[in-house]
Image (cartoon, rainbow, N blue to C red; front, side, top):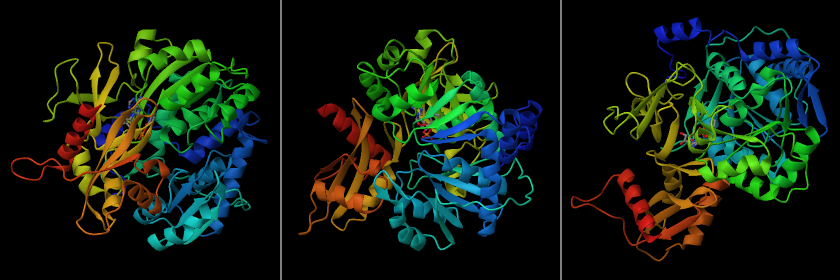
Amino acid sequence: MTDLTPWPAAFAERYRTAGYWRGQSFSAALRDWSMRHGHRLAVVDGGIRRTYRELDERADRFAAGFAARGVRAGDRVVVQLPNTADFFDIVFGLFRLGAVPVFALPAHRESELGYFCLHAEAVALVLPGVHDGFDHSTLIPAVRAAAPSLRLVLEAGSDLGADPVDLPDPASDTLAFLQLSGGSTGLPKLIPRTADDYLYSVRESAGICGLSTASVYLCVLPVAHNFTLSSPGVLGVLHAGGTVVMCPRPTPDVAFPLIARERITITALVPPLALVWLAAAERAEHDLSSLELLQVGGAKLPADTARRIPPVLGCAVQQVFGMAEGLVNYTRLGDPAELVENTQGRPISPDDELLVVDDHDVPVATGGTGHLLTRGPYTIRGYYRADEHNAVAFTPDGFYRTGDLVRLTPEGYLVVTGRAKDQINRGGEKIAAEEIENHLLAHPGVHDAAVVAVPDAYLGERTCAFVTLRDGDARPTAAQLRAFVRSRGLAAYKVPDKVRIVDGFPVTGVGKISRTDLRAALRAQLAQEA
Ligand code: OOB
């Protein structure tokens, strides 16, 4: 099983020659940022205010602390952290040691964490204590039972540091961390990223978004998500010498006072949150005048929402269409309103290759709609330890099949028109249909299940599970099935919004149809009803 599918030598050579891949590790990058911006304010979290120099020193201490606990270079460590300053200590501590963080989201529960630890053969897990009213330590027994490799569970916020020790600088072209995919088949895939490829996307993103030492970024979405981490996100801000302000909750009652107090210049939201912020800003008592740019991405932003942002929030809007596998597209700061409102931007790099193809991988006519395939200097060539899946998720010549349906405008901008993958995009939170179907199938009363997206005015999409039951006395109700899925210990956003018990599924003349066709038929049925 392959951990990191390398780029072919000719591509690697090209990306190095072009100056994209610079041979810098994350540890060296932080050292460099500290050298350049030492006394500037790097991170704010409530009353905590840390300079670049302090971040760098804390990374030394945390690296030593992990080493003292037996964590070695190359070891995988699953990290589940909310938006706090601890994130930087722990993640840069691991980077400095050459250990490999695996980024779980705060919403994940024992089902996901157990799987990440097992699949990555993690030696350690770092959890928050009580976060958002939930005690994460209650997950430990189930995660330990699922993952025999796990030797160490640590609580963030406790002092994990130790006196610094000498450590060799990690390589820049090996596995640096594992990001999560939204997933479309079974459990989320793990995405292997290197410092070379990731830091390239970070530097370019910082430039595209006009970041400087004067930038103050509010980290609203989960910090470990690719959007908030690197597009340009918290790493882009640190590269530019600006300040990151951690926002513990995305709601206007928490975010708006922080914008006013810290004079926030830039932040990033998913479309449903942008709607909530717009509604709140219309009657805002807080001074939001420092805000210069609102980035929106993760799911399709309706054009009329994009249009309302500048007048209501008093800032520019930028659409961001990206994926943890790599490719990120931005509308540019000086672009005409027409492009900013109606497209999802264009790629970061002149070496991002895009293909728009039909169902047989044949390129469609110019301007036509089709499947988006991509490869480039920061797009992976394979998922972590997923050889079988990689054979279908990538073309033989290394293009990643994004699963998104798009068309290209004459200006070379992308318009996302739909999706071919079996995934639900619930306001930016991705749900693999098959993962939820498998949870439903674990119920003894369930014969079959198909999970599909239902259009929703607020979230863009919600989930609907169609379920057929076994004959017998124990016929669960829709409410009982939702409760059953919830009891399986998974992120709350994955519990189906609706469960519909039906007598049977559509079949063709010859019998059963494929899962994908079944889901399409059910979506069509829902559309007809609406
Ligand atoms: C971002 O990353 P992921 O990995 O959570 O999800 C990627 C998928 C894309 O393949 C696409 O289906 C959808 O999310 N998506 C959008 C979108 N941005 C992402 N669909 C329509 N319009 C958009 N603007 O979601 C992500 C990663 C980095 C930056 C921004 C978003």
